[in-house]
Amino acid sequence: MPVAVGESVCFGKFDGEEVKYNDVIHTLIRDADVLVKFPSSDAKTLENAAVVWDNVLVRVQEEKMEATGGLLIAATTKKATISSVGEVLKVGPGRLAFNGVLMEMDVEVGDYVKFRDYAAQDVEIEGEKYAVLKMSDLLAKF
View 1 (cartoon, rainbow, N blue to C red):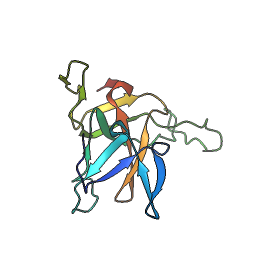
View 2: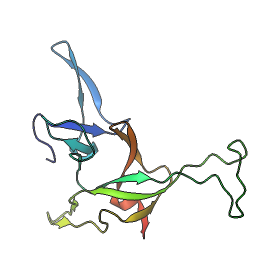
View 3: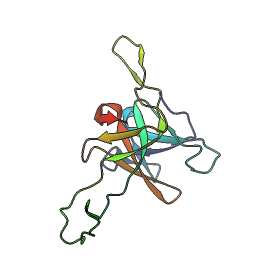
């Protein structure tokens, strides 16, 4: 289990099942759906955020709105796309293989990665938006 009692977690937008117990709403989630965890007593900051399993926390690069010749491109003429390149900020310990051996991660903090379009789970930490990705969704590192 990647989390302990009292820790705070972030999970995917469509993950989990809400249940009402003793007139209080709770959300049941699988341990595989936990993206980021925070220590129980600390503020939810980037510094104390920890990604779990084979997850990677990435600061997504903004798409440039300029052509190679220096011309600015109007946002209304640009195709609706999202950026799928970013800098790795946090790396989880890895994924357990079927034989129980931990499979190490192939990226490190500071690497830049290209990932599959729409594969990212968005999280917000200290008012900043980040992406959490599974290692299997990373296509290249540079």
